[in-house]
Image (tube, rainbow, N blue to C red; front, side):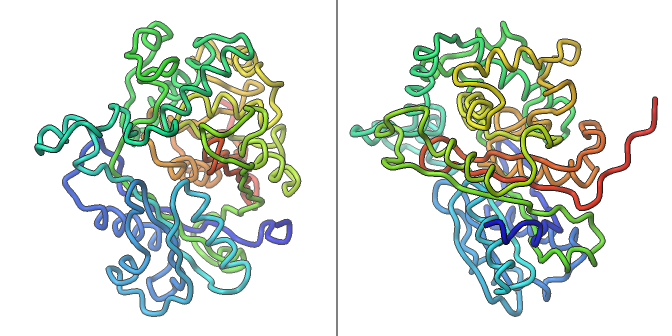
Length: 401
């Protein structure tokens, strides 16, 4: 994997805006995002020779459908990928690095099926015996604990094993909500206090409504190219410095034996072995926060602090004036608002935010001099992922106020 270091770049980004409800098809959202990404990269459809992507729940839009819808004339590589986003990103990076293709579109869509929410099932006259729990995860499999059930169980074990409280969990959604206030694309921007968090409806003890990502409709797309091609394009190249995945034996919520030995730690260790940059070097940290416990635990898995100490570490790095986390007084955490406020995008929003930060185009939330970003998409069990991105040339320092 070290042979891939800095040889591939993200040269274009596109987005179909996140909304709680949209009257469009999933394909239209994907094509809008892909077209925007290709144009952003300064390319035409004739230059695209690879397509990788999918979506949530049903697997989303198949790459062949995207090729047909956009009339891409010559494609030499395609692959359908489930979320999180690094499944698709890694596939594209490998294809470009191997010479299989030169410019790959990576896309991911979020589309809430009409039959998923409980109230929608009732409206359509569908049976409610297998309806969702209200957080987008079903109770139809009595032999295991998946999704919200599994993460709630592990959150409870974390709090019990390390003697912590829900106050630690609250730091993640409170930070996200504060950051979302600076992101016009976030679906929820209203301020959140600690009392607001504690007053929220409990979904799965100890996880409340604000501990679980916000369901949305939308799509993201990225153009991945060889680094030498990226240097000739009009956008600022964002290099894929290192990336990794992680999984352990029995990678399911109800079969994992120890929170100290999950895919998240495997991905972190693999990334550390491949990257020249680490936690003291990066300017932005984007841990996945589909459930707050995932992001909280990431600080421990990536070595910011010891097991069970994430809450204390975040309080030590909490900027009271701004009401958010600033590592070492400078490095923000999920400056776009994350899955808990911008919207649940299975890591696609985190990847986009890293790119705009390193391009220097994040507007009000821009990190001064951002040159590298650490991302930790995915969860504990079967989908842990890790990425370091960097900007080829450092951003100029901001002028003194």
